[in-house]
Amino acid sequence: MIPRYDHEPTRELSLNILNWTAPRKRWSDGKKQKIEDCLGSFIQGLIEAASQIRANRDQRRLDEIRWEEERNQQAECVRFEELERRKVEKLRDDANNWQLSRLISDYIKQMESLSEINIELAEWIKWAKNHAFTIDPLKNPSKLSFKNDEHKF
Image (cartoon, rainbow, N blue to C red; front, side, top):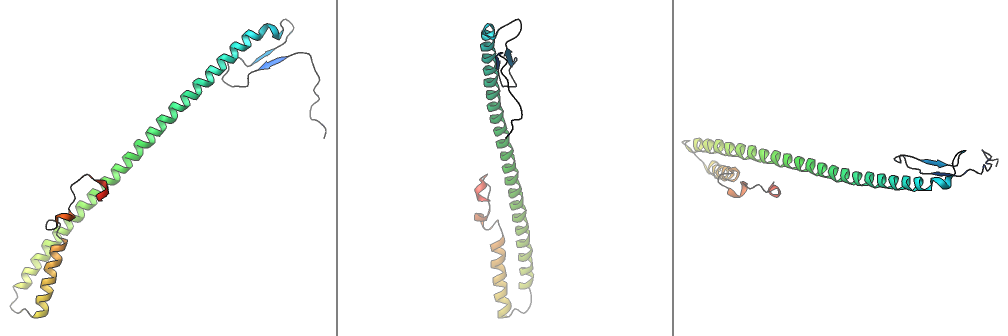
């Protein structure tokens, strides 16, 4: 393969800091100065670059911690909203079941006031009363949940 560039020695030395945060990135031999005379400045540049790299790394860690806290807060808000949604849904279901139980009980009372009740109707009334009792959340306290325990929902 033919090399892309021909490098020829110039007898000029150059020291570089390959970091975009460094205030100064290059020290070279020149017409008026030799690199040997710039070593103190180069070392100072290395120290400043290292300090800036460390500060950037620390800031990145702090940002990551803050972002994680924000994500956790958002997740907690979502969890709380879901819990509230479930509680409202349970409340509505309980209220609807209570109302349905009351409606069924009133209907049964009307059925019992009929003049003729045969055995089949009596069995059905017994079953209907049991069903009304079963769905009434006020008559089945185990179905009620007033605790703020998310695992109950």
